Image (tube, rainbow, N blue to C red; front, side):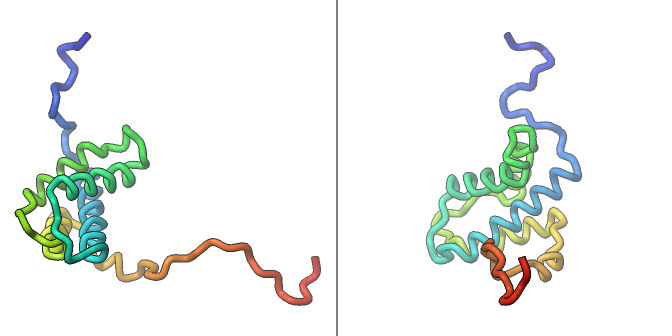
Length: 130
């Protein structure tokens, strides 16, 4: 049974600085994906919303308690609607601008690893004592 203190549908928690920071990070990640994965494909609004939601869920620790819905709503509201016929790479610019407006620091990405590492067992050096 619903209580009078329960939130109604669509009512979000108060947006905090942490939510803004995470929304900025989500948008930066989404902008990178849009620009690099099938950049010339046309972007659909639902596809964009799903991508933002998935990244927010991932950033929230893959938990329903990580603030994903609030982060997703904030990110989607800052970007706005996806225009019909826009390509992924074109829309990536708008998404990156929204991330910057939320305070995302692009210079922190300058030192990130570009080539992923593949975990593998260490090789034994020849002549190493066991």
